[in-house]
Amino acid sequence: MIKKEVFSRGDIKRNLRLPKSYTTDLAEFMGILTGDGYMNHYRKYDYNIDITGNKLSDSEFIEKHVFTLAKKLFNVRGCIIRRNDQNTIYIRIRSRAIFYYLKKIGFRTGYKRRISIPVWIQKDKKFMIYFVRGLFDTDGCLSLKNRNGKIYPVVSISSKSDLLLKKVQGFIKTNGIPSCLTKNTSTNPRYKKPIIGFKLEVNGFKNCSDWILLIKSNNKRNLSKFKKASIKWEEGDLNSVV
Image (cartoon, rainbow, N blue to C red; front, side, top):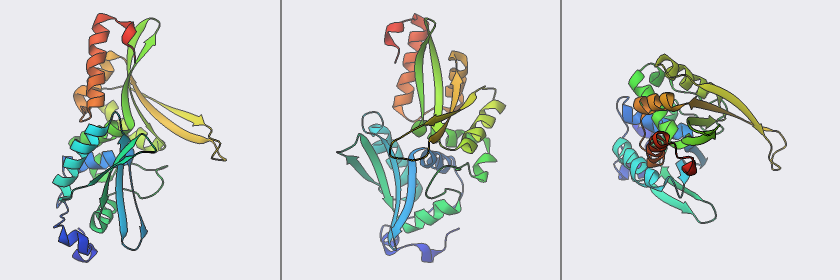
């Protein structure tokens, strides 16, 4: 799929490998990249793939799950970096071969305004499940809201790409999970134009339960929230709404 000439000396020295076929692990990695990933090259030999997270809530997910997934797929050890000036943790993979491989299988570099889901993932239900799982574990969350005195769980995914979320919405709809897609506009003094974003929401205990049963999660942040939602829903304890 990728010519041997694309491998840098560093790639060869590390015995880097590329997947020979599409797999659920690769689909999940693409979902993670789509959610909180970014890749670009700035100089002739500087090819970076970064995946970021919250230093408080996503450290275990980045350090263990994403690190292990990258090692399994590419036989590389990503570098874990914690920003002292920000509440951010990220894993960085430097590789020319991986960079061009990910581009070839459908991940866009640069701005994510119109990013979507690669066709090879859309054609396979299992690949879609793993892709959405990766997206949910990075750009999604489960929250508990107090609506008219009742706890109301909401699964949501935010993105700058309505095209991406429409694809996800269509997929979960075919699996019996209703959702709503909204457009949000905000302002930031650093930018001249308004910032446009989109949010996909799955509302209610039954629909959120169906989501978790179908998509699942590899991020304990989401799993612990769902466990809390289930318990508090049964108890009706409004003091623990988060």
